Amino acid sequence: MKHQTRKATRHVSQNEGLIFEKSSPGKSAWRLPPLDVPEVDTQKLLGAARRTDLGPMPEVSEIEIIRHFTRLSTWNYAIDLGMYPLGSCTMKYNPRVNEVVSRLDGLANAHPYQPEKISQGALRILKTLSECLVEITGMDAITLQPAAGAHGELTGLLMVRAHLHAKGDPRKKILIPDSAHGTNPATAATAGYAVENLKSNAQGMVDVAALAAQMNEEVAALMLTNPNTLGIFEQEIHKIADLMHAKGGLLYMDGANMNALVGKVRPGDFGVDLMHLNLHKTFSTPHGGGGPGSGPVAVKRFLEPFLPKPVVVSKADGTLGFDYNRPRSVGRVRAFYGNFGMFVRALAYIFANGPDGLRQTTEDAVLNANYVRKGLESAYDLPYPTPSMHEVVFSDKLQAKKGVRTMDIAKRLIDYGFHPYTTAFPLIVPGALMIEPTESEPKEELDLFVEAMRSIAEEVDEDPQMVLAAPYSTRVSRLDEVAAARNPVLRWKPKG
Ligand SMILES: *Cc1c(COP(=O)(O)O)cnc(C)c1O
Image (tube, rainbow, N blue to C red; front, side):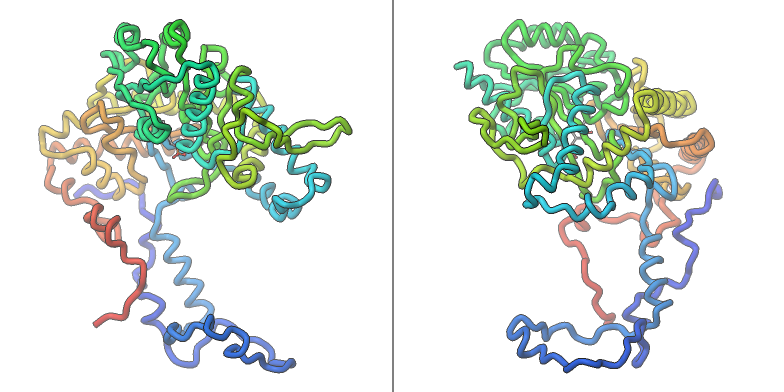
């Protein structure tokens, strides 16, 4: 077995015993002064709410408990340890200054029921962020309420539906390219539409002739990701928009891949009627593991009346406030106003970068993806040679000849100290390896990644069996991922 190019830091300690097994009577991680007030009778205070089923808790010293939790934290991978090249996820580094700003007392402890008059700072943040995102997308208005990308999609389609109903032209279908993220068809179905698939052409783009043939007065909208999930910019986007509009349909853009466009082009300028952004991807909030999301939806003027309510408005006295009097609104899509902490982070990120910094971010993201593409082109099959934007999608065609598939390569990559790329998506690439390095990565890290991937390709040639049994460096190797999701072990139980 070739040795690793990098040491995986999570394996520094052999001392992996669990905290319950370290327990010994009388040890404690805390010390309090003697009680100088009367003791409370918890039985009386809590009654039936008092837990009696806790059993003995482990007795350990402070250093043991610190090591326990620190060790647990190193059993996982993190962007702070190394590159996280999940495609379609935009796992960029999130500058610490955003965290500092979002924890400022007045922001972190603001209450959504606080009167408007003492919430002016928070309202100003909502308003300013809205203005920045409207400018960046080239749209006219925005809602910050949706709690994730998929939720933004649903909010968007509810607005499409409300708009078409108001025109007396309700429609039945949504067109979705075969390269789309799974949330798009799920959203369309949830909003009550039938989904019709649109085939991609050999360049990995929407087949405009097929779209022209499929577009008719039954179609409410086309949901298009641009750049799409192959990391390819839809070069005929103007034609696509014209085709949709000529027959009374709307163009919805899934903006999850805005990391490739910010500061360069604006969807509002290429015919998009409404779109969502993923603040947790493009605008710097740590995410993953179900962590916080935010999926603002930006719209053209004609859709503004349908935005979720309330909306932030400037009042006659110069202060900001919420307007609930929105008779055509699709209503609330979330409690209160959205994930406020993420708005603070997004605004801090936008202000810290400024227009030039945001543009540079985009250029670096695209440059990094193309650097990786060049480095790996000779080792992995590239199914679509069309230029790449922020991510590149290879296939496992060459390695599959030796019986090694994309998942096996991803598992082996863990031994090299990297988080796996996205496997098996988009579905139109059999055995996809979807790689998005983001702008965060320095050239040295990209070189290590390319070297690791090339080294794995050599291993597949020389010793495919070794690759098939990877990873070797983790606490457990191959898991039954279905069983792990169905029967998760979430509690420690004593042995025997
Ligand atoms: C991430 C993603 C989504 C869904 O966003 P969530 O915030 O996870 O709901 C939709 N479309 C694309 C292309 C994405 O990458």
